[in-house]
Length: 89
Image 1 (cartoon, rainbow, N blue to C red):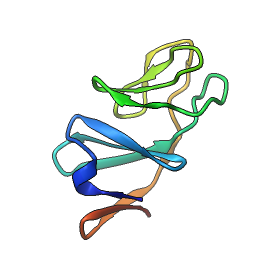
Image 2 (image 1 turned 90 degrees about the vertical axis):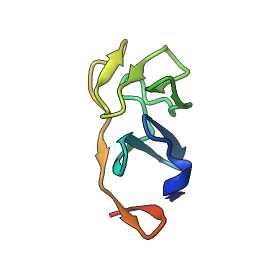
Image 3 (image 1 turned 180 degrees about the horizontal axis):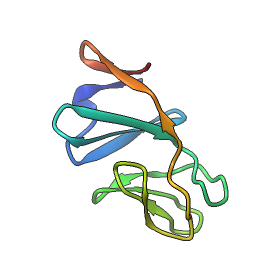
């Protein structure tokens, strides 16, 4: 899915249909890359939030809502580190 080196600490990347974040060094989390508000594809991770381009929803790096209109957190996706890569578990 993504190289661990490509997922910044305090940030994240979108790899296909999964958002991979690294809130703290060595702690990787995965979420669906679909906004819980209207089902739009998330556009990226910047300034510590996962962002939706459709209606402005933002999510914290742990998937919880930072700014609506979304009211539900992102759905978790199990990920694991395999060598230098983050993979679906």
